[in-house]
Length: 293
Image (cartoon, one colour):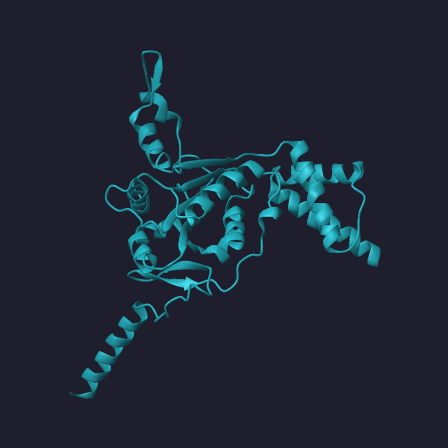
């Protein structure tokens, strides 16, 4: 073999190597509680998440009803009892994805594991499930902030997985999805033009029926709604109290502080729990720094 041919083969092999994923060792699920599905040229692999945000269930304020519903479903799942796939939908910053992470912290010692999958990678659900179906743990396949267009391949795969008619995940897997959209798809005014009134009942047009058909496959819909101003201020006060306790001090929650909190939320255009926490962190930090100086 002449040198020119050897060099050409070397270049081809180098190019092929760049397309292939690097070897990844099997995950030790006894030590690893969460993983990400990392897409590569042809498929993908599970990569362990070494550290998880240390959020606890008690840190999620103002959403007690939602926490109760999702936690009860997760406990049923861990106990080997019937449980549902869950759609957590609603306003941004209200604790949807934080709730899933908090559940992992609480229930990882009881065998709960979480695999986060980008919504575009849901087409790889069969590969993901094949990697974990024989493991002695309970897995939540979690897709955060998902939304689809009707023809997306990920939309079709998720629909099939939830329906179970062609492809159904095994008993040790549930699917939890968060979205700002209740039906996971954009909705247009024209969607309702095909609605009909039959025996005094409204029957949706085909466009709406198709959009509802995906979200309707989730056994549980859990809505996260904007806070009222009073709820927002209550959560701010709770966060201030917690942050002060953590720093071994106390601060007065007076009318002036409330006015600052309201102004902060108006600038952000939101009354969510996330905004409440951000203001509390800003306000407590500012006050404590002023005292030290």
